[in-house]
Length: 262
Ligand code: XBP
Ligand code: MG
Picture (cartoon, rainbow, N blue to C red):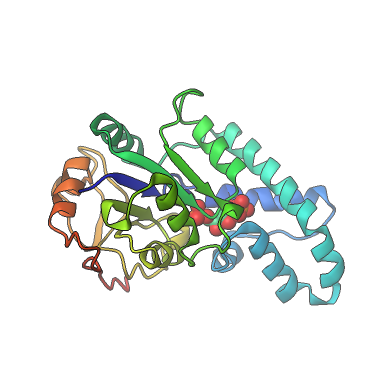
């Protein structure tokens, strides 16, 4: 029986990654570093999950000669980046991706629990929710974020943490992801994954998802189907998810995953 929906944040709930990129650039400028990450470089750096880990990787690969001093500065860089990101989210009033608010409403109305499982830092989650939901009505029962998990995606840790906090087995939930690492993480936690490709994951293979689509769609605004399960009218709604989930092996066996390579 489907009891919970577990959402990734960056790229899944909202198209946030370019704001993360801009926030990093603001932090670099604040600290007098001449670095500027353009979209192409950031897309490459996104293969490293976790902003702190991404920054360390950049230092080690692009500024090895000054790595020791730069690693000492990295916590300050990331702290300023997180503050800058919060300002950018608030200034932009960044909206949720198509279908997310609708599916959240449907799930809440049906008593299906909602969780977040994300690599991003908790303040970033709070800022995104603050611009999309009233202060006393954030819809998530559980938020598992950033450094709460021992290992970042593609390790399963953050999805396992969300499941533990929900108190349910993976067979009673569906995960929503946008990236190859996120799909791998959710699958490693035993979860079926619905993949909604995002701007920064256009080039990702979405293998392991049971359905790959451009977004959740809205009535009259169908999504683009990429691979795997198709959804009537190009819209993923709770009724369709419950129908699909009811046809799956409820012994926790691997759900019908797909190779997308598209
Ligand atoms: C995406 C990430 C995060 C963000 C940056 O997380 O990998 O690191 O890019 O946020 P997810 P931080 O897709 O799991 O939501 O700098 O706070 O890590
Ligand atoms: Mg993501």
